Amino acid sequence: MKKYEQIATEIERKIISGEYKDFLPQQKDLAYEHQTSRVTISHAFKLLKDRKIIRPVKGHWTKIKSKNISKLLIDSDANKSNGFTHHSLGGGIVKSHIISFDQRIPTEEECQALQLKKDDLVYDIIRQRLLNDVPAKLEYTIMPVKVIPGITKDILHNSIYGYIRDDLHLNFGKANRIITAEKSDAYDMKYLECSKDDPVLCVRQIKFLDNNIPFEYSETRNKYNHSSLTIYDSK
Image (cartoon, rainbow, N blue to C red):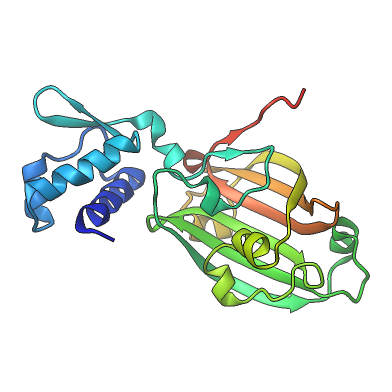
């Protein structure tokens, strides 16, 4: 990654975290802070402007486009089955922190949702997803081993959906979703940096391959100011 791209990513992280609010520091101050030239800072600003995160204003100041800040993290089409890496906007750096990863026998509820026999194995995955080092999503995922074989920690550190599509050559189909607003729980407070009474956008879903075989039974939790869902009328 080039120097100006690194600086743009760091500025974006500070916008998301709230360290930078209405305006960015002046270019000369950022050049001093990052021990670089104003030309490099200018390239970083241009990148952020192209991403529709900032806009220049008169008087040599640069305004943060606040209406786009939440969309820097998640802007999902609720009608489609795409992974977080696909949805993350602004060209940010997506990372995955594996909280737990195991194989086990499914519960009765999971057998029903994923059309499994009681002795079929499932992956039990909990991941924290970060964008530009800011916690963005908390994912609880159950997947049948026989349908999605070969998942490893290396894959979990990247994109499960990319692995399914590009390595297993499987195609995604429909998804049945229930979207609710809930209060944050202990895991939300720990891994999404929520306060006790912060609302959380919760998406519970069963996802299918294009042959109508279910491959994922999951719950995704998003901090209220770090997410949005777009729903299109299918008529």
